[in-house]
Length: 465
Image (cartoon, rainbow, N blue to C red; front, side, top):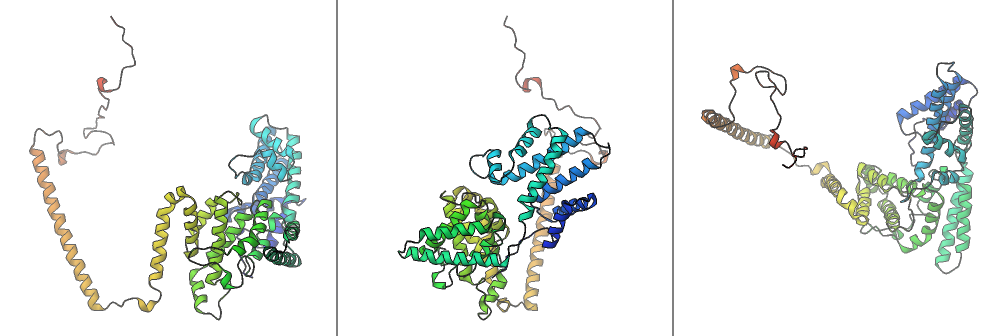
């Protein structure tokens, strides 16, 4: 199975777990080391909000514990309140993706977050700051909640559990096939989906379920005749009937599922085209994950999911801007097809993105013009000499034109200087002296005021006599 990389700022899982131990250690020195390591991670790349919040709570608690009168109680209350505000906002903001904004308290319930965290955030934002004792207690409770809700769940799934998930997905596939053929196994297949969701939490979908679904034989059939065609990127109706129920159920259960699935597919599609073409030319080493039919079928799945999204049926949480940015930043033949699909569904997007897509099309076309270095035409010394003579001839023409233009300008200046009626006159070069910007050559600042009759209507109302 292909290993899809996940970019994280820590070098290994051991380092991640070590920082967890430092942040929750009894020793203040170790907690300070944990805070500094999180700051180092932030300089490397994106750090999960739960990690940043944990470090912020630990840092302000250390400040409180070892201030020794160097910081006032009011300053501490401000620090604690700001950490709480950023903590709660960062946890609930990813769920504000719909057309209508949801209440923070309703999102907190979904996250199993204590509602008084939201109340403290509200008080710190709009009301009097909570007391220092309440904020200290809230900091401890928030660290405990983060430890239980985030840190404790960040452990790799056992291989046995991953194999069980794969077995359940394969079982679901067979039941759906029987259901399509007339055997009523819909309830059984839905029970299988329920068992999978019991085994996996949202934090693990990108490391477990999605890589399994992208294995050949699942979303992409093993038989090439059952895969999508490059002409229209259309999936076989059987494939959609088999997998739509599972994919849409996962999307309703896990907020990030649709985005995670498409981004993983885009990462595979973005694989170096050179390595893909070399694999395709060498049939003996060709991988099922780099074959053109496999990549085309993945592109067809993205197209299918985007159509569902634009029709408002499911996958309503898709971050299309993120998908658009990925395709524009990493153009390839396959991401180009994704862009075309999005433009077909969104006329406004088509208008704004068309220039970029046209540029990408030209770039990709130019890269495919010469497939082999032997096809590049050879240039001899005689050809180079002929080209040099042509360039010299063109350069002489340009120099001649420049001289003619200079003489014309000089003649015009002479005529202008002799014309006493002109308001513009050349200043005597010998009398010119450097002056400040905005001053006349004599050093005086000109009056730029408009005459009263041109300076707008009068604001004084004249009395009639």
